[in-house]
Image 1 (cartoon, rainbow, N blue to C red):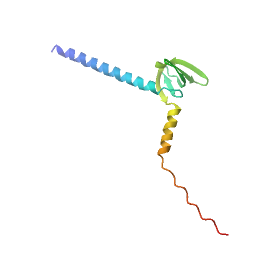
Image 2: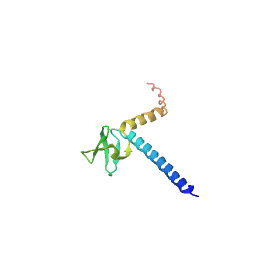
Image 3: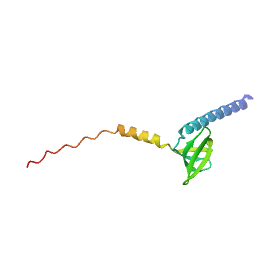
Image 4: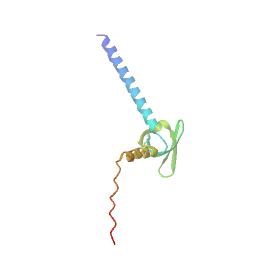
Amino acid sequence: MDFIPLLIAGAMIVFMVMSSRKRKAQAAEMASKVAVGAKVMLTSGIYGEVTSLSDDRVVIKSAGSTSLEVARGAVARVIENAPEKKAAETKAAVKKAPAKKPAAKKPAAKK
């Protein structure tokens, strides 16, 4: 009966480690989506478009000509990916579309 509290404590530790790994994986995935041109939301609730990136900082443009330089960790989520990725996706979709058949030509009228 004395091992039940130890078993519960061990299970809690395992769940905490698993959730920590999951959170880190989600943060790494989100960080890979941040690119120049992507629309993002900061942890403070500010929305903007990424104009430049560095190792630990992101410059976003919001509300007209306002530019903010913030830490990369301040980006809470990516709202819309960069236009380059969208353009590549639309080109792939266009390539997959079936080709249209040309219209048949009518014979020329006799004079």
